[in-house]
Image (cartoon, rainbow, N blue to C red; front, side):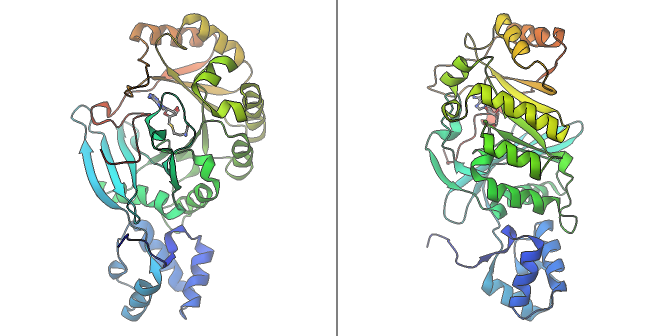
Length: 345
Ligand code: SAH
């Protein structure tokens, strides 16, 4: 048995679709609200939906799939309490999610694909290529499973785990609509950040459809030449166009963009490159998040030295940018940025 199911995946449905589904089972519409509420509380079986008539629960169990992920392993960092979950999907694939504790609340970093096809030179997530897209329910269940495990709702979500969110746009947008729905989990859009490697049609659509969600763009280079070496996506969506799209995004949404910039020793971490970056981003309302490169074996890269990271940050700040250095969490459990994979090792 591969665990695959032909049953209706109700955690991937919008509220309205769920209502129609409940009616198709011969039940009153209002039952959908109860099911929706239970699902977003993270219950793992229809049994647990105790205010539903037993006959309806049985009907649901026969027709519907709750897409509840199984926790294969859980690692807890001794350094900072970061928790890395390896979840097993119904078809035997794996995804990872990471729970980080900050002074302002808990943040869960979730995955949108098993594997990734973007092929960034510095990242471990693409090692086996793209295996498949996650369903909206599988994306959502990472948040629900972690909340359940913590005994309380997580406060923030960052879509920065394995996969490229805009390469799975439909399911991502269903997930966002569902987690935001006040009839369920009710997370505010402002508590969510989605990070893209720079899929331009995705950014444009996102500006229209989810203007309140924070957008992060993985830039990683002060110019097209360096970006092209690090990120194959630059061939399809070139640097200049990316910056143009970022400008349009800010104009349309009035929101600040976060640019992520990994600092790799001797590749993109010099003070001159910081000056160049400052010039490149001129006029774009943004926040720059510097990420010291995390070790990924066999890529031939190493992390920028701490004094270079500080210097890079200073140059940007001197130029009037808000630039922060991302705290490295969970590195002892390979849970830091770029270290997540889609397999069990
Ligand atoms: N595909 C999306 C989201 C996942 S990556 C994107 O590219 O934005 C989350 C962040 O971690 C990205 O900024 C990514 O470039 C960065 N990252 C990847 N590998 C890394 C590494 N080895 N060290 C530090 N950050 C890394």
